[in-house]
Length: 131
Image (cartoon, rainbow, N blue to C red; front, side, top):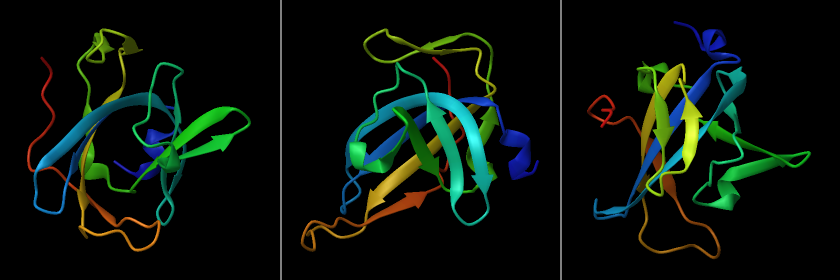
């Protein structure tokens, strides 16, 4: 599959955040439609209204619509089984998405440098599972 094959496809994104010692900090789910792909700048996803991004600094606003950018790596994208996908609060995120996407986001430095924090995107070792 090529990046261009993702255009206009829907996805459910699972993110796990880890501190510098490797301890799980939190996990989040987002959903949306792939709007743009670029081998250098990543995969831009227009988030659905029900997606609540964990950190608004990771989201670009585009005329009141939210864009979330993932690294341009295809091995984190998996065909999704049909069905309704809800968050922990039972709020519907997306119905019948094309793909499930998972990423781990690891803190690389314990201390902030001014207002900056350093994070690294890591491909998970396991494919996503659906409960």
